Length: 107
Ligand code: SF4
Image (cartoon, rainbow, N blue to C red):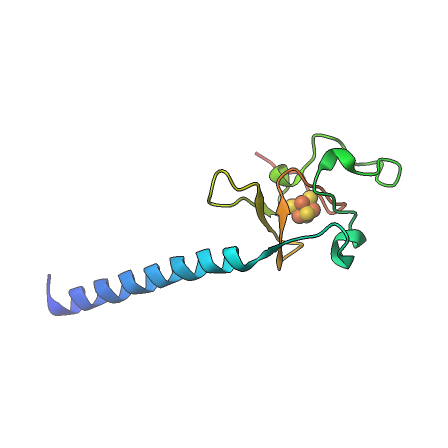
């Protein structure tokens, strides 16, 4: 490996490592959303999709939840039941949760 290739490799490796560390730290710093927060109340967010007020949200179906919503990003840790959401960008939501902005993930 010539010196330029080695330098490029080292810079790329360090950059990738820092990116991974920062991504992990950013996720760890996000707080779990509270159902009583204004942004959660505004969209009827519940931690458990089965507790959604069906009269208020007649289009809700029990099988709908954050885990099968287009906006949900599950945690890298399999045991972690919380993930990130495009809608609640600074909070984490429960994978069994639901809100009125739910969009079916197409597979
Ligand atoms: S947009 Fe989707 S992932 Fe986010 S809270 Fe609503 S149902 Fe859950």
